Image (tube, one colour):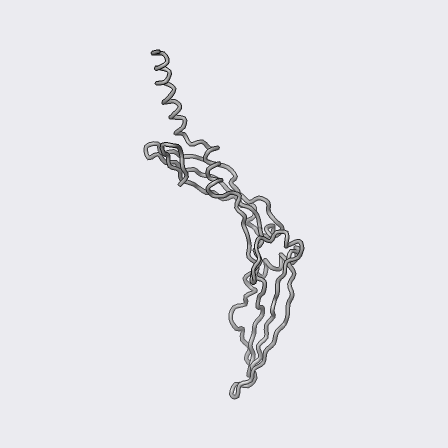
Length: 196
């Protein structure tokens, strides 16, 4: 009986100390569940742009406001070159006459964007003004380190994430192959480790 008691005295502390250690496998499983990896990464494409808006009158020509198309022009043209979208450009013109100012002429180009059949394969969402397309999925690559603080009953877990399942929309972006570093905090409770 004494031998059995001694066995319990030795084994129970060993088992409980093993349960207190945060393993890489467990940390990875919990982070994936809590952060919902893999995460779809998307891009919004506006269905309609105003391009090259100008106004002229009395020999003066000015640009009115920002060109909506400029900011995403390079990306849009690359999507078009890849056969993922089609652009329909329609020149517009409007004249107005004022007594003292004379005739004022406004010109601009209306650019309408539509997805091709190839582009529609990666459509996540569509509403009246936008297409939302998938670029890739972000997933957890590996746990790179765990630092436990025994007295405080906390741990810091470092891990890396990467992009996978890159679509033709995603291939034009320079950050498609990036690997980023992240961290997560865990706390030790009586029932085990929990992510914060």
